[in-house]
Length: 340
Image 1 (cartoon, helix red, strand yellow):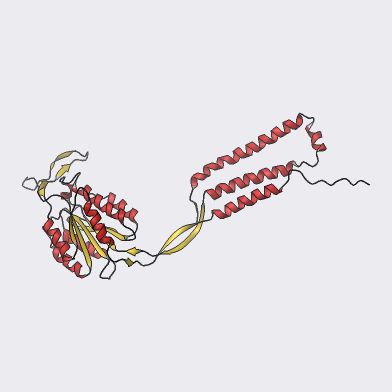
Image 2: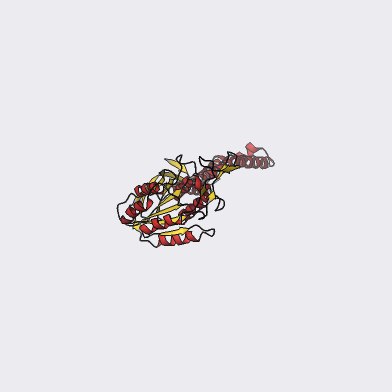
């Protein structure tokens, strides 16, 4: 397979017909100058050493050299090259709450936007670690398996909203179960789960699941989003205009508050730590420092296929053509008359 890394360089190919036109104009100008001194055919016979054919060959070589030089600048890449790359880091799975309670605006602009910003900031700080993302509401699913492709993880994160999971609620226990399965390795260390939520879970018992994960060496850091005071959940229409607040079946406005106690217990079960999201994002630096100080593991060697540059060959041909042009004289060799 052949590809060119700098395809925009091919715009310079417009210069080839311009260069040919320049040579043609120069040749006509030379012919007009000679005609000022007399008949062109007669002058050509009087100058047998001058070779138009050799001059044309020189022009052709310059044009070809220019063309190969453009090809070299376009960086042709032919074939593939296999490299083995070793990485050191930890496995980090982020469980992100996407329930409707995350639309509460006690954190500006809302809990969801704040949470996504925190996740993106953590991913941007990583170096060599594998990252996975679990989203959860009433249920949970693995959005991004463990990977070192941070760009792909950020792209998936950007598409996350409260509509990604139809089943509403906040099932932290289910999120822990899915995150647990996301860790594919069997060793009892190098594993971190970062749980970002408002902490309201009235259906499962996440502390028990966290205790089991702690026994397997998984450390859980929890980040609480929102305030401990109850706040309503706004509802917006398709045009982005607020139409009111979420209500229960009795017509009462539903309020949501940060359950810090649950998150503290989950972190405690695994010797992790609870953080509360702040406007200054100081907790992000603390979390990253804690992660970076953990013992790293060497990931299995992975093969990365890359295209290999082959511009050298085209550059070499261009140089050879220019050298050949310099060795071709404009005058052809003529035999000197033998004087008896």
